[in-house]
Image 1: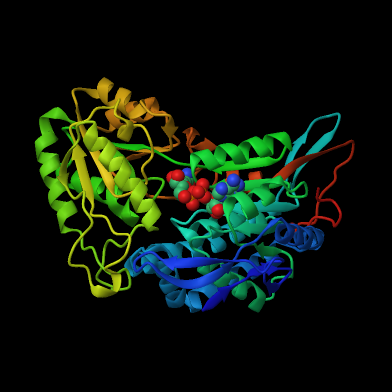
Image 2: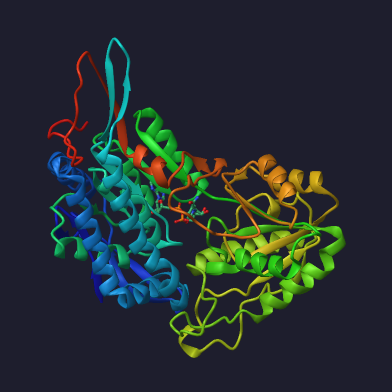
Length: 498
Ligand code: NAD
């Protein structure tokens, strides 16, 4: 059986306690690998390695750091098919998606932050007066802990590590224990391209063990976390006690609002994609579909028809659109939420069952049909809690004010989509929605430069663009009677990181 080890100080290593966890292929329910079960001791070794490597890495010029990140991106690109396959096997998502989204985006993450950091390190902010000259440096914080989930494994891992590495920090990453393969493949590439030992470390294991030990470690200056809201709450509490920088990207209960004046066919396409992409397991997926009453029946007919046409199948078959959920345990949770909705009066318009007639190879997998519900209101539990599966609940609304009220009636605030041809209305509604991102007539369109994140229980802080570069650095103001400067290459002196 394949064994996935930690990557610490540039070397693969077993857990100090030689403990292993099973890695399942969710589409088949077969064990496909064993992954090291990291414990506190392993995290301590990794943080020590990172702390030892950080000063020299911070003193390395930004272009040289960027060169190594681009070399890692090249390494993924050269073996992209192996990455796509490994991601599909670990997660149950179709190969068509890992090939077209997950792996290309992971490559782009490394490249974009590599280049952005070079630009950011080229110039420092200056504020001069007749009395003094102020220069603001962005100093790397030292060791950054990056904790990532299973739904976009390499995509989110690279999103979290690229900015800290590019800005001169050492990183200890803790990928999801459910999807460890591509992180381990990335570690091999880091070694091959000559990333200095200790700059990037990967410790595998369970959240409450390896993850919690990383968050609690006093030498980890900042934690960037993506995952569930309850986990985020506990991460936040620990970080608060240690005055640690923390960025939290958490769950959502996102609404997609279709006004009667929308391009209805396009809105139906957008709604179907937003509800069912990645089997509904993207934090930005739509779980509440709000439709203006006068077009409710027409939209529902279209969404139901599109949902039924989605090709469910073996994720490794290139024709498959829709694979398995991440695990049998997660499918149980989604089915429990579905049963709760039905008990509260929901009607299943389509889906709601485990698909039959799947190919033999995947007949024991964690599959659930794309499901559309209606008939329950905003007070139903289903419409308030994140489900994170392929189930969307439709509700009619009478007017703009009611749509906004319904969309905001949740503890979450990650994103929303508004479908309308009236762009004045789109702007007005967007300003009233209590979320981090509002899309108009589109969904999941992402630009690296824009801030990304949520409000309320969807998170704390912003990632992307300058926000990501600022998160992993501290501003240091140099106030002087005379002009001072830093090395134009972006290198910062050794021994100055905290
Ligand atoms: P999760 O919270 O269970 O786990 C996320 C990561 O945290 C994993 O690596 C896990 O091992 C680790 N972890 C678990 N307990 C921990 C603890 N006590 N201390 C430290 N680390 C711990 O989430 P998940 O089930 O892997 O992912 C699904 C969730 O992630 C959903 O709620 C989804 O909305 C959210 N998510 C949010 C975004 C975003 O950008 N807002 C993106 C993707 C996923």
